Structures are given as structure tokens and as C-alpha cells.
Image (cartoon, rainbow, N blue to C red; front, top):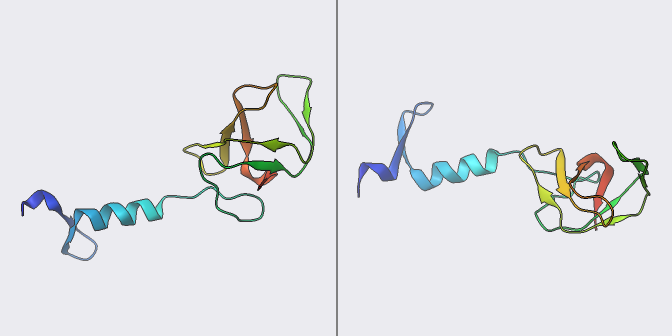
Length: 99
């Protein structure tokens, strides 16, 4: 084995396997959750839980509208999605529920 397979953990003073350190970093990453606390993933379908006015347009997305194929962003409170009439739509996770 080479030294590249281990990473020194300054907090514990131990050498830890690199795969273990990478898994711990992935687990510590904030996760996107809907209004009910359900975990969201890329490709999920969500339903709006309230009417939302869309900035820059005169449109309002109604409660119960289903948004398919969401994409998670770097911010766990925002999801990127598409609607039939609105391209490049970004919604806050507090206004959606996983379908």
C-alpha cells in the first residue's frame, strides 16, 4: 500500500483510510429536504404546497402543481427544475412536497 491511501486526521492524531474520510465528508454534506422533511434526490417529482408568483413573469404556479425531474443545487434549500411554461425555474424546498 502507498501513503496516498491514508489521510492524517489532525483532530484524532491518527492515520485514517482515504475512503473512510471521503465517506465521512459526503455524510456531513447538507441534504435537501422538502417541507415534510423527506429527503430529495435528483430526478424526483414534487408537488407545490402553496400558490407561488414567479418573479419576472405575470404567472402564478398553483398549489398542487406537479414538477417532475428536479435537480439538486449546491444550496440544500434550492432545487432547479423545469415547468412546461417556465424554463430555468428555481424553487425553495420549503414550498414543495415529494410526490
